[in-house]
Amino acid sequence: SFLSNTHQIIMAKIDLQAWLIEQKISVDSYNVNELIQKFQDEMKKGLNGEKNSLAMIPSHVGIDNKITKNKWVAVIDAGGTNLRIGKARFDEDGKIHLECLSTQEMPGRDKEKETKAEDFYKVLVDELEPFQKDFDYIGFCFSYPAEIFSNLDGKLEKWTKEINIPDMVDTFVGEGLIRTLEKRGICGKQVVVLNDTVACLLAGLAQGETFQASSYVGFILGTGTNTAYVEKNDNIQKKVDGNLVSGSSQVINVESGGFDLFDPQPVDDQVDKKSENPGSHLFEKAISGEYMGKITLKLLQALDADKKGVFTEQGKETISNMEELSNEHLSNLAANNGKDTGSLGTLDADDREIITTVYNAVVDRAALFTAVNICAAVVKSEAGTDAKHPVCVNIDGATYEKTFQMKEKVDRYLEEMLDDRGLNIRYTEKNPENDVPAPIVGAAIAGLTAFENS
Image 1 (cartoon, rainbow, N blue to C red):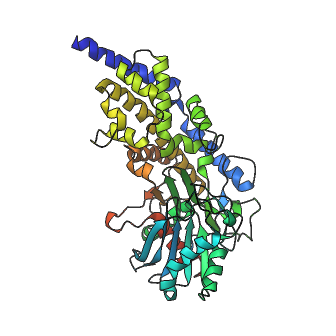
Image 2 (tube, one colour; image 1 turned 90 degrees about the vertical axis):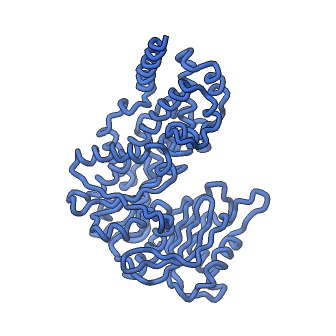
Image 3 (cartoon, rainbow, N blue to C red; image 1 turned 45 degrees about the vertical axis):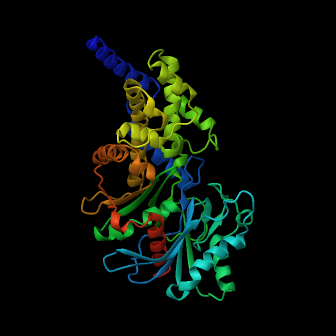
C-alpha cells in the first residue's frame, strides 16, 4: 500500500495548501501593491498628524553630516536586557573601534526592590568616569518609548520590557545624565538620545558613504519590529518640537509594528486577544519572533479541529495539549538542522511535515509583510532611482537572522517589488569578526554627527 500512502500525503498537501488559503495565511491571499499603497498612505497621514496606525516620530537626527574620523565618542546602549557602555571611534576606512566596553544587566529589573533614577544614572556615570577626558559627546541609544525633542533629548513616556524605575517617567533622560555627570565635576559634555531603530539606520552610514547611498532605511525584526527611514522636513506637516529647517531632512521612527491595515485574520485576532497589549501593534504580532510560534500553534489546533484525522493520535494529543510553541523550535524543525525542537522532535515524520508546512506558510507571510514594509519605506524616501546610488538598507534582529529561510524569502519578495518600481537598494554587509551591535554603531555615529557640524 506504499502508493496509496504516498497518494494520501500528496492529497493532504494539496488539501493543506487550500486550507491555508482559506485561513488567509497563504501569501496568495494578499494584494501586494495594495498593501504597499496602504502602508505609504498611513505614513503620509502620520506625518500630517492625522489619525492612523503609524506614529511617524521625528528623531531630529539628520544624515547629512559626515562622520568625524579618529575622534572618540562615548556610547550607551540601554537595551531590553543589557546595558552596554564604552567609547568608540571610526578610522579612515570607516571601521569602528571600541574600547572600555562594559556589559551589565539593565538596572530596574528587580521586582522586589524599587530602583531610583539616581541609581540608574550613577551606574552610567561610574562607567563613563574612567575615560571622561577622551570624549565630548555621548550617543545614547535608549530602547524605550520616549518623545525626542529638538534639543536631541528624550522624555521617557513609559517603561517596557519589565524595567521599572518609576521616578524617571516623564523626565528627560539626557538631562538626568548630564546633571549626574556635573555633580561628579565632569562638565561640558553633550548627549544625543535616539531609539534603537534610528540607531539601526545610522549604523548603515559608514558603509553607505563608501558606495554613495542616496538614502537609508533601518529595519529591526526580533521579538518586536520597527522601521526608520529618511524624510524631507517639508513633508512633515504635523506640529513638531522646534523649527524644521526647510530643504533639510531627518530620520523618522515609523513605529511600523502598529500598522493595522493588512486585514488581520481570525488567527491574528486570537493571538492579539491573549497578548499583553490587545488591539495594538497588530503588524508586529503578524511578523515578529515573539508571535510566529503562537500563530503557528493556533493554526495547528484549528487544523486539527477542522480536518479530523490529519494528525496521528500522538500528534493530535501533543498539539492539543500545547500551551506554547517557540519560533526557535519550529525554525529548527523546518531547517532539519539537528538542533533543539522541543516536544516536536518526538512526533512522527508525517506530523512533522504538516507542522513544517503550516509554519513555512506563517514565515512566508511574515517575509512578505516585511518586504512590503521595507519597500514602502524605500518608496517614501523618494531615493534609489539610480542604480549607482542605491538606498542603503540595514536590517537587524535575531528573528530575521535566525528564522529558517526568512532572509531569502524577504530578499526574493523585496527584489520583485523594487524591480516593478525601478528602485535599487543595497544591504549593509555584516562583518562577523568586527561584529559590533547596531545600537552601539548607531549611537556612536549619532554622537559624532549631531554636534560636530551643527
